[in-house]
Length: 179
Image (cartoon, rainbow, N blue to C red; front, side):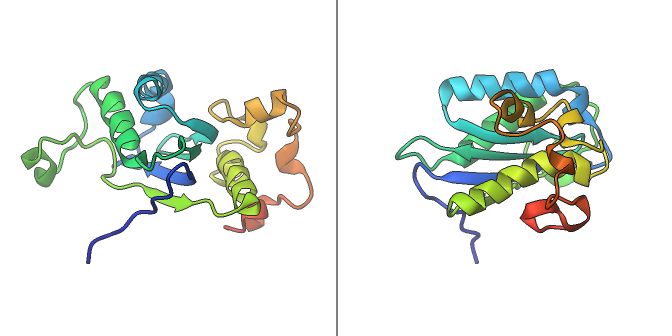
């Protein structure tokens, strides 16, 4: 059986992308290299970043693709390879990756979910923003520097104490419902 990804042209998607070695902190240690890779890719393949958070070993994002465009896989490939090219070759690489000429920085796959409606979008944007709290990196989402929550706060859509608001308890995963 072949895995089939969602493919709604111009759709909005939630993504989780992980490092191969989840004990590394590369994504925050080298966040400027990640930003460079994202900017370089967006120059070639534009899309809207609805929400994004970078954690030490994984990132979560919500994107909206341009009308008629379904190709988020190429975008992730370009981000991952662009970031990897900026790093020294010090990671452990499995033999199967060596045979294919791959680095050992990222997990090969990523997880995506096609956003279905406004409520689904809100739950996933909330989940992106609460993720640093959920993983114990900070007690308030606004204290995490690598998050689009700061854009939402500047726009007046969220308050700095948003993650402490009733109904967003970390124990039950907030409005997203993932504990």
